[in-house]
Length: 419
Image 1 (cartoon, helix red, strand yellow):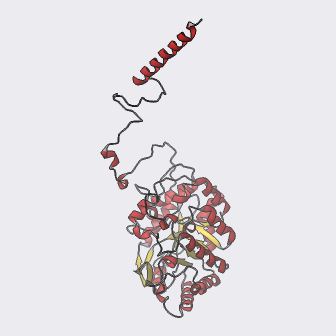
Image 2: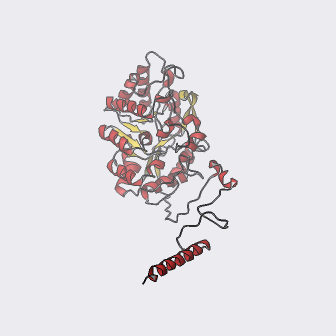
Image 3: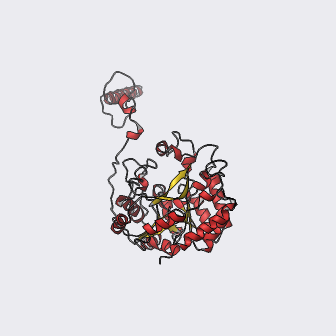
């Protein structure tokens, strides 16, 4: 009877030695590997990186996804498209980020564009950066008049006149002239709030809500001209460009896109000033470009849209943000389906080569159509070897036909009088 505990302990010791021996020889199933000792072979808890593996530069890292998931190619959209956000021309003179004068540079030939539009099911392209004065007249003649119905051109503020004492009146008159010659609306780049200064390119920055622009907003309301406004930029552009910034590569490639530092307003302050303008001019229709530069914060842009019935948004150059939050994005599309416009921010090559998320071409449109129409998973948001806005992929939101038709076409057609 007294030998039983001894025999049990002896059996336990034998079993333990057998288990340890098996672990050392590679058996032992899920037992953890032994640490220490002189054994050779792969040990997942004692790996040593090689110099070559740690020396790979981030710019050279181009991983290929190992996911095996459905791939849906959408060559043509479910409904005819009005792309409300393209750049087919640009003012030739720029001073410190402020476009001036009436001379224009043209990025594309209308005939080549029409061929692309026919391939991709695009009814019309809206050229936002159409210029002012004689330049605007030239742009409208080059695009709108050559292919009626296929192009719509917008005007821009006459910032070259900003230092004139009667600028508010002159600007209102410039908007009236633009309307008379066929401009579809007014487009503001991020110039206002980030580049325009009291001396155009010198002195204090001019605020988005500066009262000198009130006649411009009111003239647009009186003439039923929508205002397409780009205020601020992605939130990451206002943060340090360090290892914690998810847009690090983009900012390293485009350092002039960074607005971090005391010389610039904050992202929050810029948007607050924009919202004050919207509240002050309820009769003016505002289209906030790039989901209001709040695609990373849909709850906040939703608050703005709930508060102001005169606010719409476009999705241009932000499917990279919307597509990585597909469930929240789909709810946003469903809730604001009558106030969201299709846009790409497309720039023709070679001018758009450095911004692949905006490079005009068949592939760009197919990515947008795939995002809106399918529930495909984990795909590229731009035709580029490396994701240009951040190293992630996107998911389709699979919108139903009744919402797709509004976003692709009907909302813009109603706003621009193209029904």
